[in-house]
Amino acid sequence: MMVSMGSGSNNVMENFQSPDANPLTTGAEITTSPPNHHHRNISVEDVMIVVKSVVKNSNGSLTFLYGQEYEEIIHYSIKLVAQEFIVLMNLRNDGETKTFRRVLSSSGNSFVLLLDTPANIVSLFQKMRKARLQTHLTKWLLLLEGDDALNSVVRLQEFVNEGTLVVIFVKTSDGHMVHFLPSVDSDGVTRFTNKGKLGSTNELKEIFSPESQQKRYNLSGRKLKVGVKEFFMVIKVGKELPDGSVELLPAFETEILNLLRSTLNFTYKAYIPKDDVWGDTLSDGNVTGIIGMVARREVTLGASTLTMSESRMRAVHFAHPYLHGNFLLISRTPKEKNRALAVLSPFQLQIWICITSAVLLMGPIVYLITYVINKYVAMDGKAIDYQWFHYNIFRNVINQGNFIQEESLPVRVVLAFWFLFCLINAALYSGMLTAVLAIPAYETPINSLQDLPKATKEGFTVGTLAGSHYESIFKTATEGIFKQTWDLFNHNDRSKSFVSGTFLAARRILDEKFVFITSDNIGRLFSTMFGSERFHLSKERFLPSYIGIACQKGSPVNGALSRVFLKMKEGGIVDKILDDHDKLVPVDPSAKQVSNKKSPSITLTHLQAAFYIFLFGTLVSNAAFLMEIITYRSIKTE
Image (spheres, rainbow, N blue to C red):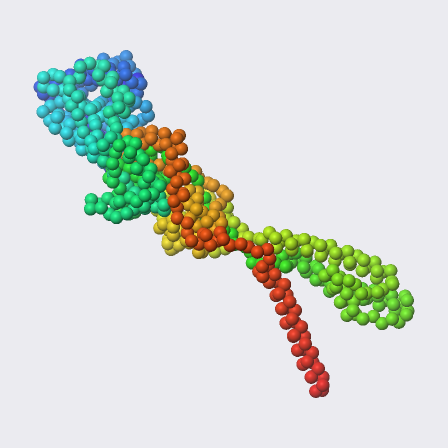
């Protein structure tokens, strides 16, 4: 057990400022007034009852804050607990905001015993609420006395957050110690209830136990406010109601909220944030969207498939996640490559050049060998037709017979190897062409973030949901692949990359070159609605995401929701709701048309190159014929 004693001042608030102000005063001059012993009802014995009970019934730490008027009591109490480990913390000399924040947010059972005038205590809680320093990890023990004590208890109700554990002890004029415990009314406002006189330390043990704090809290009959944003097949918003709330139509997350409502017996109304975004914590400390509504305690819960993130959890807490997924890339299904030159695709350009060169050279070579043999070896004076040799060499290439009749052994050897060369090429070409026509070739799919630079060069636009967690992840990246991906977004015209709705993103994927970064849960909805054969979901899944309900920091609502979600997950209820919801997703008519298409074995697209070659040959033939006519007329004229 560690007991930390804060050095006294006339007003505890003199040593505290909000995080937006300058650090706490260090070594500042503090005006003090002599203790007023005449009106002081709290005694050392009263303080020791609380201190010893904390020491006995907890393993946490106790921080003692007090005003200058109670300095004598504090110093005498220190002597009485001298056998404990005591650490003196001078708030004036070591009183920075971060120190105070660290004390309040320390792990374990942390107690703060606050002894000061009622007005100073109310002022302290008012500033702590503004600075968002109240935490469910800290248990506040307030000692009040004086004529204004009971009024201060009422005023404290305005500044004590739901979930902040506060026990108020009031020393009455007749010498008795009465205590007040917090509760929450149906509207979520903290109320302090007078539990009467404090009889013994056993009652304190019951008050301090975490179990009793949980027993005193339930959602039965509560009227909650929920921040929502309309989202593709998840949250559907109807008409706006007179009180500013909106009607929620049947959808996936609406069913989740209704199940929580029936289980925990509360009612709720939905509200849309003014900026109509999911929200996040910005670099300047401001919090936007639904997350901002929860952080500012304008609503109790935040829904609309909110993804948990470190930046969001700095402003709010999340109940146990009810859904999880992974980031992926969604693009259109890779199109089949142009088959206009399919008949040329079995061989690369280098091979076609080599074969063409071989055909052009082989005719003259065979002709030359035959001519030399007939003139200088056989000396028979037999005439040889040069074009005849060329024609037969070409016939061999296309697997036609050879009409060259030559008895010379050298010519026969050359032709034998030429026939073998043509046979190998023809067999390879035939086999490769069959494979190319049977298995169509497609564009290179986009399967990872590393593929995006190449995709952008091919005309693709990288995009995601505007104001979403996906945008925030890439926007806040300072290095690595996420930063490189952020640079690929269109920042000159945000409407090109940052879409306002998921349905719009699906249409852009189908109608143009657009890569959409989202969750695999959205990818499943796209496939169900428009047809799985129209979308390509990247093989790479990155950055696992968890989806939950956002709650106010320190709110006991978090624990209540988490227990229900754990039971729902264990029983498979969330998966059942998700499956039922997927069955209700409307199927786009275009998806049925695509699924009914049947691809024939061979189409004109596959064979168009053959017709192009035939047309090219015809044009060359006509050009040659025309040149012959012109030449003939020219000769005749001369």
